[in-house]
Amino acid sequence: MSSSHTNDPRQPSAARPYVAPQVAPQDLPVGYAGFIAVIFGVAGVMFRYKLSSWLALIFCAQSVANMRNIENDLKQVMMAMM
Amino acid sequence: MANPSLFSILCIFSLFLALVNADSHFEGFEAEEDEIEDLTIDPASLRSPPLSNPTTLADPTPKPPPSHLPSPHPPTTFDFWDDDEFEGVPADHPPADPKPENATAAPTPPPAAATPPAPRSFTVEILCGAFLVMFAVNYFTGKRENENIALSWAAQFAAKDSIFEKNFSLLGIGDGGDDAPLLLKEGQTTFKFYASGRRFCQGLLATLELKSRHDLIARIYNMIVPCRDEISFEVFMNDDAMDHVVFALAKKKAAKAMHKDVRDLQRFANVLSPPTGRKWVVDDLAVISESKEVAADFVTDAVIDQVFGEKAFEKFGKGLISLHFSDQHPGVHKKVLLFKFVLPAAKNMADMSRLVALVPYYIDLIGRYKLSSQARSKTEAARQKAAQEAQKELRNAQQEAMQRRKAERKKMMEEAEAKLSAEAIRKKEAKERARQMKKAMPRMKMARGA
Image 1 (cartoon, one colour):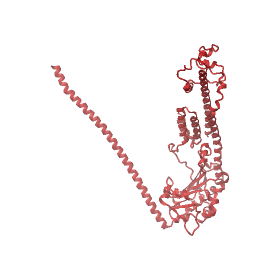
Image 2 (tube, chains in turn red, purple):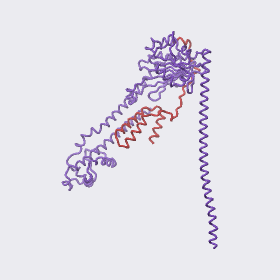
Image 3 (cartoon, rainbow over the protein chains, first blue to last red):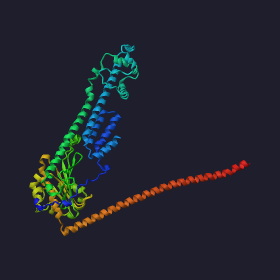
Image 4 (spheres, chains in turn yellow, purple):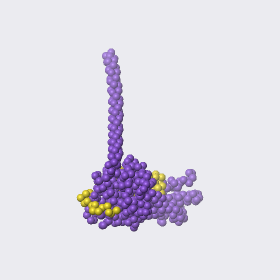
């Protein structure tokens, strides 16, 4: 297959630096883990059921572990805390 | 990286929660103890409280024994636990507060009685705490694993004297330079590699989608629903370097799904049956193309010999998911070549080198490719039709939006009118009243005058 490029295919003049596509915060895919965490948390408080609070904590950890864009998500977390 | 610190905070928080829970438990048991004492001991013998413990008499709440957990319980949790524990007590029984001192003064020491049921109540905490610890450990090991895979891919294909280094003048996301990072990490599972500076194309973006190894829950889920590490290359072709081409190659089932789901394939292309009297791709694969001519020109003998033929496919082509070349790609870039492959394990990265070699091969092949005039006129017509339809659709959408706006305006006007008319009615009424008043006035005057 390498026979097809006999000469150097590189063209430094045509190089363009990478431009990261901008994604609006509301377009990000919704993490289901955070949602489940909230549901379990509310259930834990409402019914005073310990296991559900623990599950909330576990799913909270999962949602933190799955953060894609740190700045964006931290912003959301801070907002949620407030 | 803020993640480790966040995790430590979480861990501390969980410990704190466990402590709080443990606290409330001991209180619960103590309250229960009191009630049991009250029930079993004959009330007549307890009528006169022994004065041996004057401090408890002064204090109405039960005094915790010395071996009890040190922190005093908040009144709210105590109330709550009390409520629960009172369920079995008969209603006519006198309430607990007059004589809790009896219970504490009783000879049985609470810690001995309270310890046996304790392990049962902690199982949830132990399980969840252990799971959290495992989650944290798995987070770091899984993250390392994913990074290893991505780095070994980069070392194999993007390092010095590797295939991408020989084909692209700019590698990585920096502005060039030797120590610019090659890979861009997005989250824990996505790595991106960018290359640019090559004939026929503006740039290449490779996205490594790895398994969620860092996430224990996703890992367990993947045991049931297995998934693979994937890499996809997007090559953005120069506008003048790609003729009218719609072509895709995938496993038979996937090809059918692609033909159904991907819009440009659905519109322009068909699943082709293998031609007779020619070497063709292995039977597992299906070709989707706009015309037979394009398919025949893209499935070259070299490709069949090296990757997709009967002999080579088992060994070299296994990792193929799909190829999809199109000049009608939806999105910013119209002319895009898409390659999707399965990523092998970190130590067998070289297994996919022939698949990766397809990328520059097809860039050159398609960059030089020119359709015959006959096929060209056909594709031209198809594209014009498609463009017209798209325009029509756009116009329809615009018209719809305009109509909606008009209807909204109409509704608003009507509402305003209704308001106005209500006001007019009110004004009329006011006038009427004024008139009646006027009518009444002279009479009054007359009455006064008379």
